[in-house]
Length: 257
Image 1 (tube, rainbow, N blue to C red):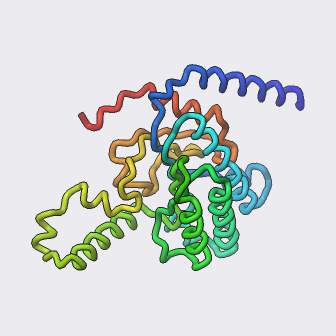
Image 2 (image 1 turned 180 degrees about the vertical axis):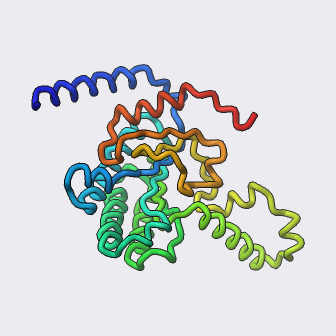
Image 3 (image 1 turned 90 degrees about the horizontal axis):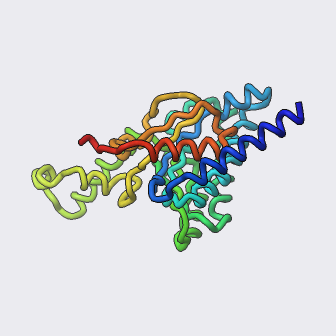
């Protein structure tokens, strides 16, 4: 069993090097969104606890961002906690929030990435809000991958918050509702999203075999490519990542044309 597993590992690494060697860095997506799904099912299959599954998923993030750095990705959006996740039992949600806080601290301490929160801060515990603010301030100068940490995030909530922000901005400027209605366009709404002036995702990866968006970046992904992977997030390998990039590079993006 040990020799078979070792041989399989060697073959996978050799295959990954082959795929990477044929990768055209000019065709690499500049912004990747990731729906990191399958932590709980991975833990169940391993006969372990849900918390262990979430920790294993958290441990995968740094490794994943390292692969992104190697392939010249500029922006990564990680969906760490959705607005729907707040409906989970407290015995799961409490440890999960702690694990996510540790992830944010680890990303900031690494020094290679610039941390940015996307989501509704008011939904988060005060300590989580403080941790995110400190991480953003500590990494504001970093000239590395911009890592959007989607925490307390929902696509519909983001659009609602964008409209609210737009209305408040108009009120502050003394703009009438008639004037605002005349000036509203796609660019105006985009500027009020959590991602502001960032480029939209080129590629969205979802692990665990689920083939749905679940409300992830509904506005920004209008023209994104999607890659659905059967493997659970904690078991996601570099070869899986490279396959996603290869698949993306082989597509012809028409943007509706």
